[in-house]
Length: 196
Image (cartoon, rainbow, N blue to C red; front, side):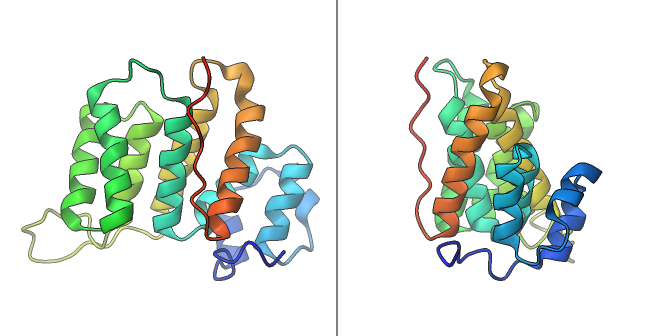
């Protein structure tokens, strides 16, 4: 599956360790040595959350944050709170510009939103994708652990999949996985807002 080229650098062993697959999912992918193939086997066998988590950790940070934003936007209610909307918009801005100011602003809005929404977790993902968790005036940088971006992205995607209509979770996750495949292949992975 050469179309999924952004995953080629992902080290499958590290990604699997971060995802903590349940035993039945591990059995399903035993012996597969390619990240893309593992994701596809998980999805085909209805391990949709696990496939999404794998994408969250395997995509490069910038692309993973964008994916979180697209999933959040897809299920966002029309009356979304201002801090949530701003957290997502600032995370999107970080994807485009990747400045320290953008990621810190995204984190402030995620905090204002109470860390309760997919948008907030997209903002957290942008912040955790930077080079330091320390304040902007700190003398020393405190690099975030490498897995934190994937944790936040997985949280955003999972929350988006169950928002308002939890019964639509599997359908949404299939759509989200399609967007992730598009992003991994160099596309935009855009998702239209869900019809209400």
